[in-house]
Image 1 (cartoon, one colour):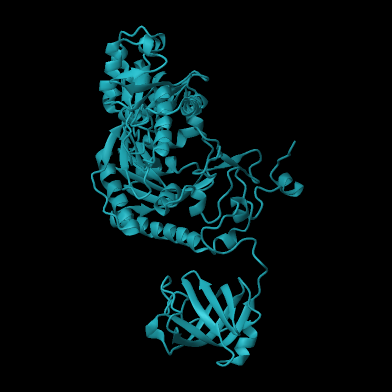
Image 2: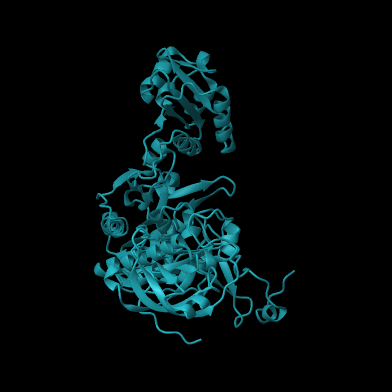
Length: 588
């Protein structure tokens, strides 16, 4: 159907356009018929303009306008006028004008949508995902996608200005599963062989460092076949970064500059740098998390020294087995009822705790079911260590160090929520977490796994410990954390073939397995690999936080559900026998 090219968008017209003849195209947002005069809010992604069909102005267009319904796609020609006094809508930029319609063309009719195209709708998410093309018409969703677009531009400008080169890496690569499962793609031409979709471009970007591209970045799709959560998707986007001839301080400097630029251009917020740093051990002991939320205090306190000579069996066992005793002070919560305390006890039990020790602070001492097992010196030690006062409530957990700290960290977040300590308008709390353990021991398989990945460099002064006590080795690794969410993670890499071989050996990866999985990278290192390191930003999670959302599905145009389904186009889907036969696959 023929229609005139638009002269303006629906968010563009102002009082200086009064008297002009204009052409607008868009969707019918709302329709009001007031005594024969029809008012239509016409919408496109730029905004809303009110258009008016008045029989005394143009009877032909008014007659056609009677047919208009919500979500019809139309083109109109008309004259801009100042809205009559008292009818202005100052809530929208175009609210002081409207357009008197001379000509209307209905480009496409629409059936009634399954939900209203407006913000803050109370609609089941599955319905929104099934009709995602309608959901994306809503302003808040379009704002989220436009925010992503702006973030892409900022990233590319910033890294280009700092001499980084954007280089695409393959989407079909070799399967080298370490941690999450690979998505596999069968090869039609090479029977029985499979490509994998990249969990990250890790090996390729290290190869690029060997190739002499000393500063690489890429906004890249990554794929992991893992259990999903609100902030996970089977396919996700990273800003992937690698640099040669750098140490950790160089990485911090470049990344802090990027984050500062991002906050200034997106939120008009001046982020203070250098960014605060905490070691992994400090973060765990104070906050019970390697991605702590620092928008509020409520710090945990290690109480092990208070109970060095305790006769209370639970604490005595924790001290003797090298575990930890950790405490948390809930200010002013001393009047919590037994029912409230039982709910919190059940909360920590579901996380794996044997129980929760609680104590009320009264008369400058502690009142609790276990108080008879504690000496007065120990009670006063608890009060002093936590800075407790009358009317406060004390929580204590003990056991294996990381497990007990992690559970208390979850209780910390729960209490912060109950006490209303997390303010939505709080300043962004951003920090580096450093000095991670290089390895973590898995009791089930009786072997070490790399906490980040097997190419992460140990601290150089601790390399010998890899041979004698690997659990004590720290990594030259770092995570960037925003409001309790990890937004980026990286490390200085191993660039020496001999050290990489030792790392594989420590991880229980044989020479043969290393050759099969990583041979091409190891061979590349033999030709002169520079010292290098990098980081990857979780782009979706960063966009989610900057948009003030709680799920990354809100900032992805076409996301999957929590079970990895796309409800709109019904994928994953079955394929024909002919397709399977071509790929040499049979489904049992």
